Image (tube, rainbow, N blue to C red; front, side, top):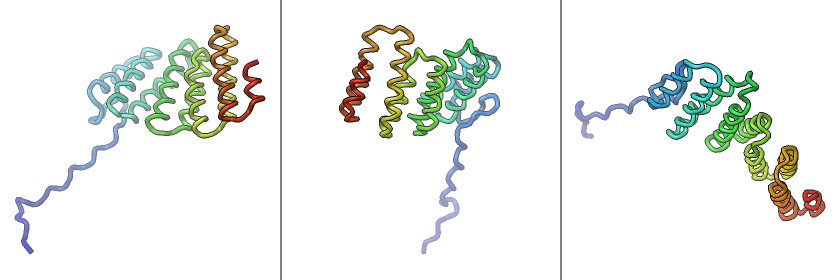
Length: 193
């Protein structure tokens, strides 16, 4: 057997980089400079201003494919806003973003549904969390929860005195689903009342 000369021996592979993680000031060699700068700036701020910077950092991190730092930044933003009722709309947006990240990036439907629920409770005028939750339950085959979320959205539209067209369009969609996929003509008729 031929021996490999010492100068031709393969070098060991480089050590694996640690997964992206946020340090106390968002410093990590794995986080791009723009994201790290936003995180450092967010750490220097307080309240809603800090939360908005954490949200921007999270979006920048997601664009770079850095899911864990993005989620941590969004969780930090939500935590900063938890005690401020005046910032409920901003926190609702952050919770919706957290739900999307858990659903789309990690496939964690349980966590996604929790964040969608929080987002809707914080801002009942935004139907997006209900719609996303409804889709998850539909994909899981839980028609009971799909119906509950349709009913919740219809009630929300009616409470906010939305146009008859938007209420009717949602009621028609709900009735159509109950009739076609749920084989429930009585439920479909009830949805149109």
